[in-house]
Length: 202
Image (cartoon, rainbow, N blue to C red; front, top):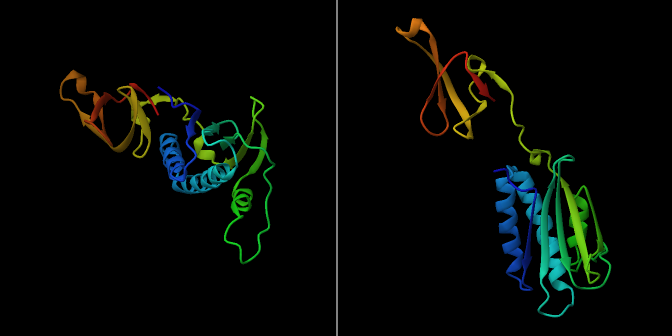
C-alpha cells in the first residue's frame, strides 16, 4: 500500500509537544524516503511553528493542530500548524540582547515560502511553511526490462516489494537446452533465479 500524502494530528498545549511533533515528523518523512537534510530542516521549522502556537493565549483545553503534507508535483513538503488564537504572525527583529523572537526569522530563511490563513471553522489561524524536498516525489511504478538488462545497484520489484540488487550472476544449465539462468543477489531475502529473457520491473 502506498504511503499517504498527508498526515494530521493534534497536540496538547504543553512543552513536551514540541519534541513529540519532531518525532512524528521524523517518522513520517522516514516513511517518505526523505534524506537527513530534509529531516533536519523540517524538524527545525516545525519546532518553531509549534512553539509559536503554544505561546498563543487561548483557553487551556484548545489543542494545536499539525498537518504534514507532500506536494509531489512541486517537490514540496508543507507543514501547517493551527491554533485557536487571534493575531497576525510577523517576523520580528529582536535586539542583540534578546534571547527569543527569532522563530519566524528562521522559518522565513529556511522555507521556500510561508504564510498564514484563517481556519475553516472561523476561529484561529493556520501558519504554514513549504520546504523544497524533491526526494518526496512518489516512486515511479518502474519500467519493464528483460532480466539480463538488470545491473547491480538497481531496484527490482519481486515478491510484491522493491529490492536492491547487490550483484548479478549467470548460471548455465546443462539440462533444459543449456538455457541461461540469471542469479540476482538481493539486499534482503534469498537470491532470485530467473530466466535471463524473463521480464522484470526496475
